[in-house]
Length: 144
Ligand SMILES: *[C@@H]1O[C@H](CO)[C@@H](O)[C@H](O)[C@H]1NC(C)=O
Image (cartoon, rainbow, N blue to C red; front, side, top):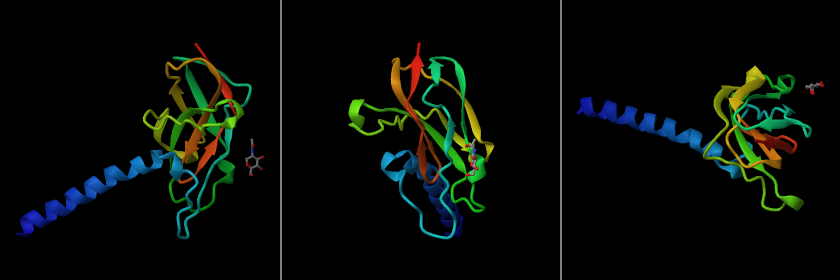
């Protein structure tokens, strides 16, 4: 009996752990403030700025300000999502939660490199940097 109980418990833990990160990709989770003494950290994005132009297929760097880090951070790993805004701000941030630009990187690094995906050229792209809370960049341009 014990032989079966232990693996079953491990399987449940493994399944639970692998299912948990998917929650962070839900846009509605961005503003949620977890309870408890650990602090929410939403590092301000330094690059891209409103003047940024990226080429599809090129390697670019997103940077954020790590000086704002509280001593205890509830989620020290980040996910970077691409989104876009529509004229007048209607339709939300349109974050591509299924295709993160980067994933599982340490927020303490203050930067992450990745390849710009082959998306339609537009001047209203944004990136969202998400740990346990999220920050959105200014609108910038992607060209091809
Ligand atoms: C980073 O954050 C610190 C603390 O809020 C601030 O003093 C500093 O000016 C920020 N640096 C940049 C480059 O925005």
